[in-house]
View 1: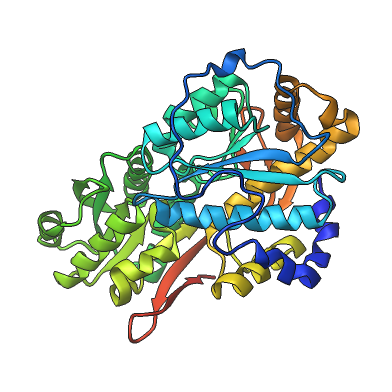
View 2: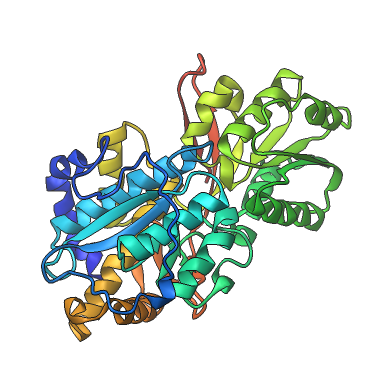
Length: 420
């Protein structure tokens, strides 16, 4: 499982090749990254005779993330990370000489889109496992589809409570919000020990935001702070004047927002425009540079807890960081790193399984089952650091961070600055 580190240095000499596949598309993707797949009526539980076809071609791994809708601000970063992983691991021989092939399906931003994407990947594309979906809200609906089909699922950004408990075939490389979220509140207190009053905002139509706000609210109480108001909104909202005014009238020292990039960014902007000058903590849904064009200069100072740092030591992260920087001219975000790590887990688990029993000789149902077992017992040195899994599929990770957004004077450029 740890052989990825030894192979990584060579990536630096092949960046040009690697980055060729990270533009608008890649020749190995068999489905359009712009079209939402249609639903299928096939019963995945009855698909027991298909083989992987790896004896004559690449091993297909499904990527079911949001490439359209307001959630695409997050899903596009996952696509970028997955493509980097595909090119990198194939340049190192794939699965003991057999390449992998990423098969993309767009989940859009709702549960129906995620279910359709999963069904297409399982029944039509015959993938051996799935990375996705983007949102926890989608995972609670789509993951049971994969569980019934007995196909491994690795959530790249599903951090709500209860995700691994969905089933035996569900795991995640995204650390739970209960571990990550409190770090940003503690960082806010470190910057301003005089904090007393806190206003909380959350998207009530999003399962993750509802889960995250519970953690934030409990952290506020645990830190001895006063929760002066809880304001609700929808991820589709663009006007937050009423909620923002209600909160500002209570004179909070800290505002905490659980939402997505578009709605969260607009809320940050409107809070500042209405005169709020205190600290702002954003949840994981705001953890993307795609937030910056939404609130621009008014994004400055927002604190966001992180499960990834571009500065994390290690050869594979150094190679990933350089490749991402060369292609996108900015530091890699958490969602890209997590998608890369999810693909890496599949590749290294397949490599280990292939040494025990050649994967191209296994029937698809048996391959999926044995691969799932292998995933859970492995240890993986990823851009996130060393990770593993508990028996139920919860990620084991030790390194976490907090970043603060720093915007340029004109508000057109900004970056996440990691706090010591």
